[in-house]
Image (cartoon, rainbow, N blue to C red; front, side, top):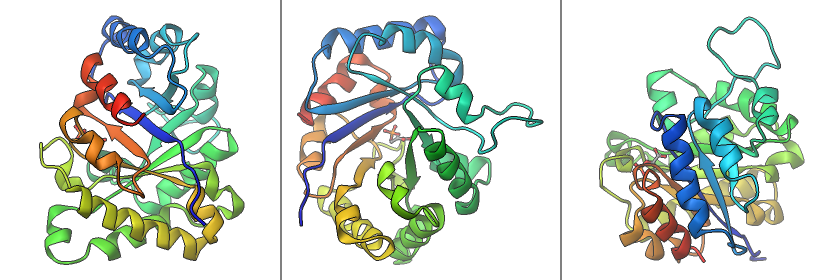
Length: 253
Ligand code: PEP
């Protein structure tokens, strides 16, 4: 049975914005979106700006997210951040398994799975990224790749599988200006929901939100977001300017 899924728009600032710049951007977004009951809005600044951005959005509907974390509770992991540290800064969400981390830091589905479990355990909502490369798409392997990433990254979650958000981000569309057409994106989103149905059950699969990511911008957001299985967006470049991010949120209303 089709369920209502509240749209979720998250800004992934990546390695951009100092403390002061982050505060400015967050304040700009908040000014425009002080009331936004129909859409979940999330800002994911770099670790160093989590505190200032969190303070800037504290009395608003906007939620805070991080871009990564380690799966262990504490310990000898130089340069890493654990779930409790994110909770300490009032993070609600954490992006996990972004393709840039899979590509540059060799994060595997197994590692992403450990992180997803640790995030849920710490009451953080994981935004789990999956998506095929251009080479894989051209070789007709999109469904195989996406199925492996979903089953690998989300294995062993049981009923907790409903406590996360998935971001389908075709790697060839990230930061390239190329966007999947609404039809291409919808096709993969529906396929992902089918995989989730096989892993859990139809009710659970229908309740999980699947964002699209990959050069989403004001000009293409409304059409992408009107697809039946596209439940929001994970926004990179267009989230770095308050005006364009806010326009995308409005397109989701
Ligand atoms: C991303 O990296 O999550 C992303 C979607 O980036 P962009 O919007 O810049 O393609």
